[in-house]
Length: 473
Image 1 (cartoon, one colour):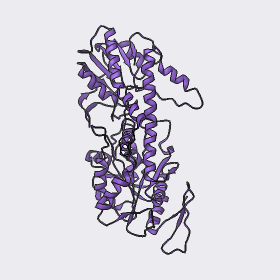
Image 2: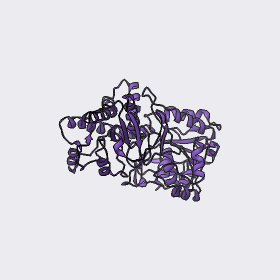
Image 3: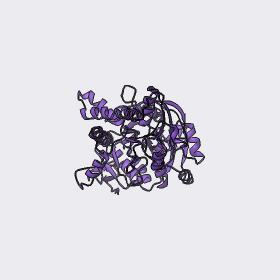
Image 4: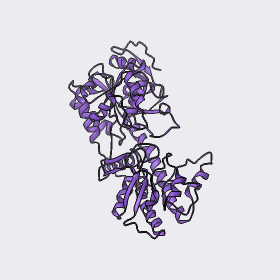
């Protein structure tokens, strides 16, 4: 809780004591006004980017009582939200409609940013074809927001990126292109006028996770200086159980990368061990489950057909790229990337192996892929290994169709142009191979195995089912 007290120092109106360091932070009047609104949840908050991160965040803020406006250049998203419709499967339309009743609105007009107490940017940070950071979304969003900045506003970047992005890329744009001649509050003397505040707070969305409530996930916050840290921390404490304050935007940026690199490296480890276990005639899932019974020193990670999602396949390479600036090679990251990127080809190899056992060639075979999403029970295609496997199978002359209850169609994305339609699970016997790429709980795997000629399982979805038709990879 923030406590204000009078001081005799001229132009200094308050001191706040941080929960994390117990250090004293000078809070000028322009920040006091924003802080008071954030504390009593009457603040107006603008969220830029209404995708898998920005929309859930907007709904949490709205539910907590904040006055939320969502901004997006995609007018279809804006139209859907204004009509109370959802375009993300795991977010029911009722949640949108409830937020609308609380005052949530969506717009493509960035002029509305001038009326906000805080602005949160949740935009994509993909990789280029050469595996270099593509910060065009962050850059363009900063340019779009800068003209509307007002004195005392808080700007928070949530997009995952390399350490230094907030300070070296975003802040210079915000300073150069705002119309009021504002500057970011520096780490030196506290300004009474003419400044805005900047922080970084990495998103920690985990689509499909039903075991941890979103509001129970601690929020890491690092400001460009201490006032920004406190403003951001108090804002997020309005919707999350707690904020974890770190010393800088760079520390917060690095925290997110460490979280994802940790997962990337460990998934690569079990993927490599899976390949070895297959050669040795062993079940790696059985081994992992047995090891997971150890109550200390071990956390289970599970193999798969490749990495997917908005984080693990991409974020480690942001640090790998940045490390080159310091003449440093991130060997663990590079090796993990090589192992994980080889998994789609590994799956295709086992499809060919299974077909060969049935005296069929991959060229000309009819294959039904089960699951397009990168993980089970979600409608998220980002970086899904299924997309890569389809391309590899087609290159080998296979005819590929798919079934996924979350995707009636799959059209065009940044790295693919499939234009496919979901095939019903009728007459599975017409396919030479049924390939399980995503282990959705909707599927009856026992029934699928019984009706198929060949089932190649990349997810251990057929665990406990005994059949000569199953090839586990």
